[in-house]
Amino acid sequence: MKILKNKLLFFLFFYFITASLYAQVNDAGLWTSINIDKKISKKFSISLSEEIRFNENISEMGSIFTDAGINYKINKIIRISGNYRFINKRRIDDSYSQRHRYYFDFSIRTKFQYFTLMFRTRYQSQYKDIYSSPDGKVAENYIRNKLTIKYELDKKWSFYGSFEMFSPLRTYDKILFDNLRYNAGIEYSINKMHSIDLSYLIQKEYNVKNPWTDYVICVGYNFNF
Image (tube, rainbow, N blue to C red; front, side):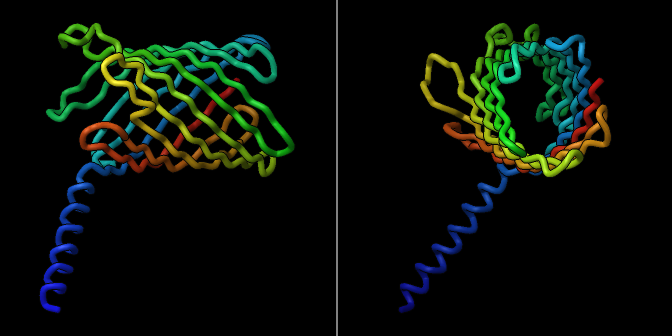
């Protein structure tokens, strides 16, 4: 009986030590954004976004980026877009790494009654520290597939949930994904031009050493004209 009790205590001790180690790679974040969309014609629009992401339990400014793009609506269902994103990402020594990202989206959306279903596939290419890193001119390429379902409660309120998978395009290892995102939120339309949204996002790394999990509150303001 005493041996069993000691084994149980050892197991509990080992469990809490292991849990605390895993907790060190968990983080709480806050992502804030301002998004502007300008309609050029019935088919074309341009967009501009500014976002600040706080990490380390919302204690420091982790990333700042500016995103600009052009969007084309082929028909009511299919849309394509191309974007450029300039990123400043905080390093451990509190300096910032500069990154250039290019991505292209192909999306399909369909609506039935109060529900809208959207699927987006994205090709993404990113360069990090081009002039200060030996690997700066080597791109990190990804395919990102995202599925979103949205429910319109009325003209003002809508709810949505999404799931996104990051698939690296690397030749040295063939893995299906290394990052997953789950997001659920609510959007409020102030009027035809202004809206705000609030969501909660969980982002988890897979198939990597010491995987990281982020628990993020997202707050966004949208201006469409």
